[in-house]
Image (cartoon, helix red, strand yellow):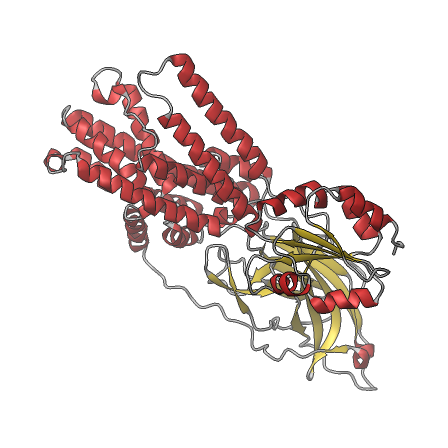
Length: 600
């Protein structure tokens, strides 16, 4: 789900937030060799391949479809938990010489995705068996039959970080019934009858559209939309003072901004279905680290606004009768922002609504998506068109300031929830950047005031922007893989290496140790050091002493008698005493010692 075309479209739709949807893969050319192996999916260090073998399961003969891969890359087992209908794993066999029954799948297991949802998946190593049904086990008088068999595999593969494009691949093998006695015997202890698709309830058109309208109304109750509520209320109150006509126009402009967001989603869905034959899968954007990062940082900035760190001034066009265009444009933009902010909290509602819309005809699905937007916009349209309701709105006062500050803490909680969905290296780097970004926003809003001279004001704000950009350039990109293959501290593993006449390099570190991080940058990130460790077959041990009960912590204290970290210890096969370094300037000495070792 990282095609450039789709990512570009989503960037335009949701303010540079990337989405993870792509075009469907074309079918691969069949492989003509028996037991051939085909890669089905790959994402970073996660992959999955498939190969075929003629096999027997009990009294049944057939084809064993053998999947081999990493545990994080998974296929969906059930249509009810797949990202969209029809994306569950499917295996079918076709041959001019033989007939086959429905594929028999192993038992699925539960996988917790980045949003905390439990989904039914197949992952890692598993076997799907396709039984032969138009030929029996041959006897001595049976005519020998041979023929090619095409196995079609379709579905979608995902990891905990992203979903890949839907695929349909074909792999070929040859079946020779004369060799059936030598076929591989397999056992699928948990395999059962093929799953039957449960019929979904059939709703009338008006009932379904009513549910879509209700879904849109419920979005207004989501805490993610609360950041703009004080601004909305203030704008409505100010517009009400200028007459019903102006208040109504401003309210309708706000509703138009909401509808534009949903119209963008509907347009994206239409383009993807017509051009690529795939559907817009609501929620996949949250599997993309770039989108989650952007949403989390946006919520942090809005929380700072709630705390009063900086101020969003209402344009003069809102409070004056001149220049209404700018005021209406601001209302449209605020409506669009409100719809964007609702996405982290409205995941369940939007996912269900989009899943239903994408099972309908294109026109009906588009209407359903727009009805959701209408449902979200209806309360604001009613409020701004009825002067009686506007007069009952409470006047701005201390209650609004307290409400804003309380919402700020809620926004920080939602941002923390989004950050927790990221993998550990990205998570920590994003937290550091969020602190720098908060400092830059504080500079922007608090270091200058209304009376500050223009030169000083722009100097401060340009410096704040440059600092944020520099921090983002350093912290936001995914960290590069470590050049050294560090193993966790294990005394048995260390002893075995020494018995095999291997040197052992141990770095004792901790997550809270700043000097340890600096040591990694100065020495262990160097290619020449990493290359020597690899060439000399040195066992590299990462002694994590973050917690007091870790094995490395106990060894550092009791065995090596060291008071703290960072400490680097080199164990050489020809030396009884370990070599120790407590500083950060021993790279040359380490290299000299490693060069004396024999190469592997």
